[in-house]
Figure 1 (cartoon, one colour):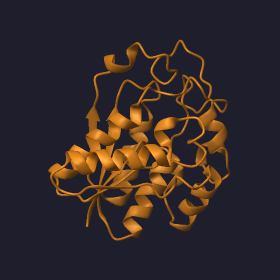
Figure 2 (cartoon, helix red, strand yellow; figure 1 turned 60 degrees about the vertical axis):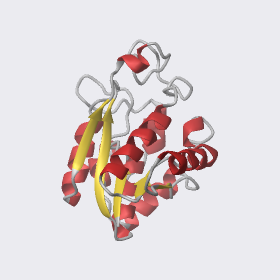
Figure 3 (cartoon, one colour; figure 1 turned 180 degrees about the vertical axis):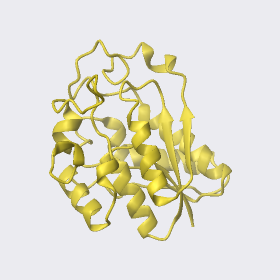
Figure 4 (cartoon, rainbow, N blue to C red; figure 1 turned 180 degrees about the horizontal axis):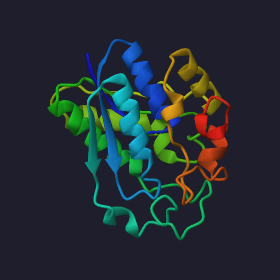
Length: 204
């Protein structure tokens, strides 16, 4: 079965790709360039996809869509914290585009990597949102495309443990929202704090 895996370049999406492949799917990785300040994550996505030998597409979304949004992920002048890291309805847009991408390529499944630690802070990472998107896709697509989100009940620690068991290339991932001038993780933003673990190369 063909599957589209949303690959940001972070830990969750890396483990997600490893998981999808372990289930026997023929995968295509899909990433988005939306004007994020941590654009370096796309380089990690390329490396992860290449390590598995899977096709990788990067779709550019007009950054002006988010320019007026008060998000630290798209506006470097805004300090990064858990609240400011929210990009309005970002995953609604991502999953809608992924549904079109999947249907056009005959893929029956979209893998989405929201985890349990994200849900309290980001409404577009909750099981309720994912179920609603699944219903919308069912009404809006001619052929069935399902959303699989196997990490939504897992903490970041559990996701990393799953990644290690699947031998996912966690050393290739990037999680930091505000890279330093030397392209190193800041070690202070919410993503860095969640990612902090000896299994991650950039924490060593």
